[in-house]
Structures are given as C-alpha cells and as structure tokens.
Image (tube, rainbow, N blue to C red; front, top):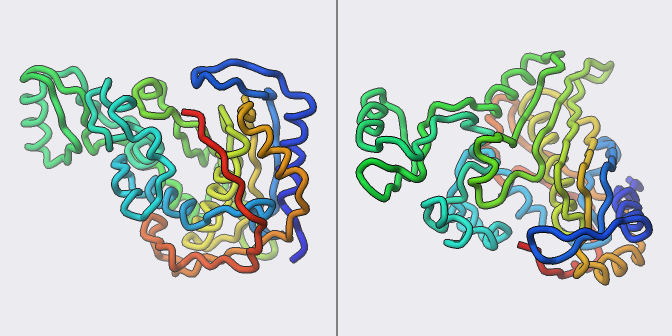
Length: 319
C-alpha cells in the first residue's frame, strides 16, 4: 500500500493559506476560510488516518461508539479516557438550558438514535412524566425548576436512524434516501455544540465483487487543523463498520464542506504540517460477524495496520 491520503488534506491547508478570507466569529479568534470545498477518499486504497501528524484512532472510535450508543452523557466518553468533548462539558455551556455539566443535550448521539423525540422542556412535568411512565417509556435526565416546568428531558420515542440504516444496508437497498441527519433545527440552539458534520448520504451499489458502500458527508463548519482529521477518520471508520456488519465492502468517502477554515492561532502549526513529507497511509480491518449490531462493536475489533505517523502537533481548540 503506497497511497498517501494526506496529500488531499495538505492541499486544503495550502489553499486556505493562499486564498482564504479572514473572518471574525463567535469564539473571538478570527478564522481564515473558504466557502465550498470537497475531498474524496478511496477506502480500498488505504485508510485516511493522517500520517503527517499522529492521530489517536482509539479516541476517534470511542467518540463514534458514544454517538452510536445514543448517550449524551459525556461521562460515558470520559470513562473511555477520551477528553475531546470536555471543553463543552461545563456549566457555562449546559447550565443555561438547565442541564447538568455532563449532559450535552441533543447532540449527534441523540439525533442518530432518538431523532425528533418528545421534548420535556417547558411543559407540565408531573403530568407528562406520569403519562409516559404508564406507557412504559424511558425518560432520561429529568430536571426541573418548579412543579410546572421542566428544562431538559426526552422521551425515548424518537426515530432510530442508525437501526434503520443498518436494516437498509443489510437488505442491499438501492434507495437514494439512505440519509443520516445530525441536524434538527428545533435543537440546534440548545445543544452544548451544534452539529458540525450535519448530514451524510449513503449508497449501496452492486459490483462484481459484491455490494459496495459509499458515504458522502456534508459538513456545515470545519476546523481544518483540529477537527477535520478526526471527521475524515470517523466517517471512513463508520463506513468500514457498517460495511462489515452488513455484508458490504467499503468504497469511497466523499467529504463536502460549506465553511471550511483554520483559526489564526493555528497558522504556525498548519505551516509545520504542510512542510512535512507524510508516510504512506495505513489500513484498517473490522473483525466482526455480519449479524453484529454496529453499536456493539468494541475497540479490540478494530485492527489498524501499518500506521507510522510523524509526531503530533499541538494546538488550542477555539471554544
């Protein structure tokens, strides 16, 4: 394997430095960005885990497993010794919505596994709780300020997008409606961090080698130095995982951006990474039976080979 997927990513970094426009934003740290960009990775030609700087695939997998579990409790992620959401796990981010510091609100996990669930905000808490309990519905993380008002809480009555996709993939669906949405307008302003990778569309295609699974991700906002390397690897890994448990094989991962940017305090790190000559891309294999539910996969079933990256490059996240 001699493919170096980093080349496409490094070209994006260079394009941002050469032609990006400076903008202010909510973080107080200006960005240098472009509107509209796309990269495509052939997953049969190596796994796109960057080698121009070291990335922790276990962290990427554990975050993905957290999303797939449906949990919005950051302590579940912390239990796996992953701290990448800790900057948003604070009273400042969650307190105004009445949530405990550890409750991230209706983030990816919630949207993927419980989309459109009945919200218990600003309604008669005792009456609703009693009615839902009678129906046998689970209600998570209930908290209220007084007897007539609840600030957070969702019934377990939403749509499970992951289960549906897994069912469709196993049925070798040729539908053009294989969609995974992380964006719910009703929830976008009440989460600790609104979804950045908002929408993915999937395709199952019959080929002489079997059925190929392709993924196309749309990302509304992209921190290219810190976030995008994780996003690339995460959705590429998700494609491998779905393919393995559904009797498919991974094809391409296409990554489309709207607002793609680097922060001005990352410029030196970006230049350092561009100056490097990256080693070849690694490979990954998911060891699991086809009847395994994707949310039950564990880290020891993810086998990464030939990963020999250059040293990691540290940078501060803009919150």
